[in-house]
View 1: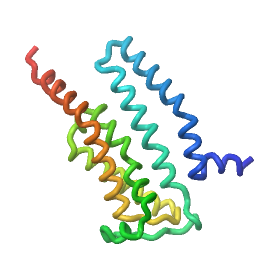
View 2 (view 1 turned 180 degrees about the vertical axis):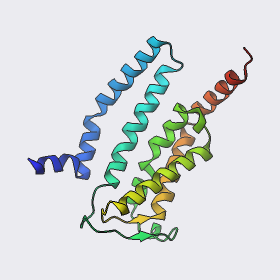
View 3 (view 1 turned 30 degrees about the vertical axis):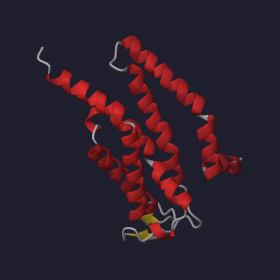
View 4 (view 1 turned 60 degrees about the vertical axis):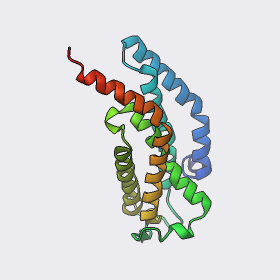
Length: 184
């Protein structure tokens, strides 16, 4: 019984399967949340629901994978504080994976939260989240490499993804700013 749970929750393949299988639940959740907000008269109900569900659905699996134990759980992994030292030894899969871990957060956070509607703020949020992940990998004795390059790649991925959604949050920011400064 324990091994079947581990196959689902403790392996990369299991997490990928759970992510794919949970897509209908995520879509349904976003739909119901948007509908409830629309009925309640909320501003941009579908957009905010999609952004919230998208942030969670797109970010949790990647973070979950990075917090899986290495070969020898229970011991500290390697700390690599020198920027760009590990980047040269990473394969393409690691680089792409690190770019994607916080990409959903970077794409959807400015759409949901007006306070995050700037590239600098998205980069700051992503860098802080990535530093937290790397510290957790070390503190939880996961036998993983805690690297500055991972932080740089995670942050770059979130920044690039936020640029992909720039059109929508740029529009939202100008509309919201106009509403804030409108005299009643």
